[in-house]
Structures are given as structure tokens and as C-alpha cells.
Length: 139
Image 1: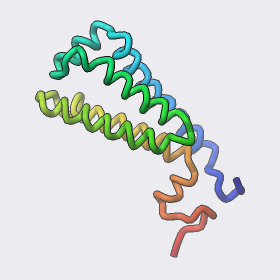
Image 2: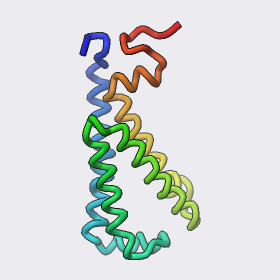
Image 3: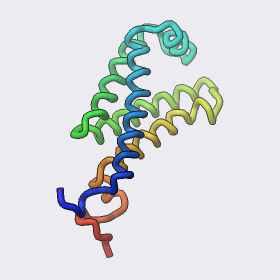
């Protein structure tokens, strides 16, 4: 990696911190589902899901969290988890959950997840800014 491809240290550290926060959230949610913790079972049923869906949802969430946590598959993991979060948003909207605290919670998590990924990945940051990998802006 050349000096032009490196992001400022603060950006990289902030990206790592946000990514760790998002990954911890996904892993805790997945473990709660896989262990069939009573509040998780109850909450899942209140959302209209059968108890039999808890473990498969936990497995799917764990797969996404692991994909996101591994740098080489982090973008695929983020795309996968964005879809998962979209399902959570739709579920909360369908049952009439409060907008700011429940329905949009998946959006908040997605913003943290994507911000972490973009800040820790100089090539992705440059691509989103429209900057070539060399660091100079186009045009």
C-alpha cells in the first residue's frame, strides 16, 4: 500500500471502533437467538415470528456478522446485513412499532455498520468520494 492509499489514522481507528460496535451488536443478537434466551424468544414472538424461527434467524445473523468481521468479506457482509436489517425494519413497521425507537433502529445500526466499513477501508472511502486510488480527485 502506497502512502497515497493510506487513510488518516483517526479515520481508520474510528472505522475499526464503529465496526467493532456493529459486530458486537450482531453477535450478541445472534447468540441470544441461538441460545434461545427467554426475552429473545418472547420478543421474537411479539414481532409475529414463530419460536421455531429463532435459531435459523440466529444462524443467518451469525453468518452475516462473521462475514462483516472478516476484512476480505466485509463488504459482502455489510450488504447481507443490510438486507437482514431491512427485514427487521419491515417487521417493526408491520406491527406498528414506534417509528424513531423501533422501526428506524435498523437504519441506525446500518449507518454505524457502513460508516465503520467506509472509514476503515481507504479504497471504499475513495470510491464513494469519487477519488481515484492515487488520492487525487477526478476532474
